[in-house]
Image 1 (cartoon, chains in turn red, brown):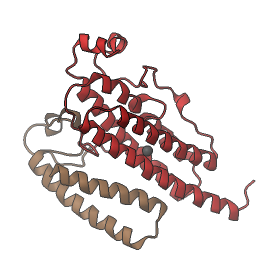
Image 2 (cartoon, rainbow over the protein chains, first blue to last red):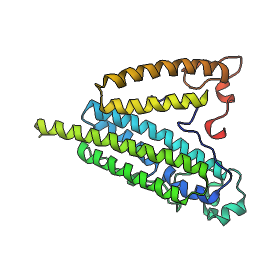
Image 3 (cartoon, each protein chain N blue to C red):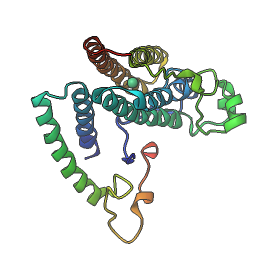
Image 4 (tube, chains in turn green, orange):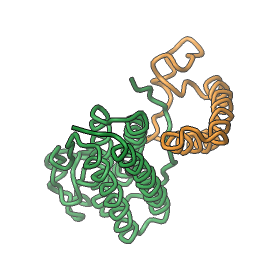
Length: 190
Length: 77
Ligand SMILES: [Fe+2]
């Protein structure tokens, strides 16, 4: 069960309309290393995790990623909501407009739709936690590139917050992986 | 008040994830409960003054209309 809390985890302000920036930021909404992929990956891997610690961590990070999805969605919405058709066209979002008008959609920065092929679930906790750590690093790198691209300091501030969270998640997954490896070293598995 | 809630909420998320991998850390456990009390008190105050912050029965509706739908959503603020 989830309870919705009517606030963002981190406040989102934008300087103004910025369609070009939105076109890049959307990748953290529906791209391969984005927040949707992160949340669904972790929430799905919960079921086959072997310890109290790993189940709790995947549950809770998966939940925080949903809050990040909402932050990214809010950025994109605020950057594009007042865009004219001409402006969307000029920024290369004519195709997006044809299919979705100004609605958000789960795509990467070049318009490819989200796919479950972005995520993995091997059932092996070492493999899955290692994938999760790589996923956090890829998300961190993506936020880095977005920060380099951003010309709106208010959006950059939010992207920095999100990048920092990926570093914390990586750290926590690393601790969980160590504990699982220690456990496996002391137990016999068939 | 919203800003304070965002700050408290953030500390709670951090402590929660930390405790997931450090379940016996006495200091973190104590801090977590302190934050829990502060969040609960602030939420009651906010719900009364600004309308319900949580759905599905976790906030009270004050007044004769359904405030949950009347208050702006986070992406509208
Ligand atoms: Fe993350």
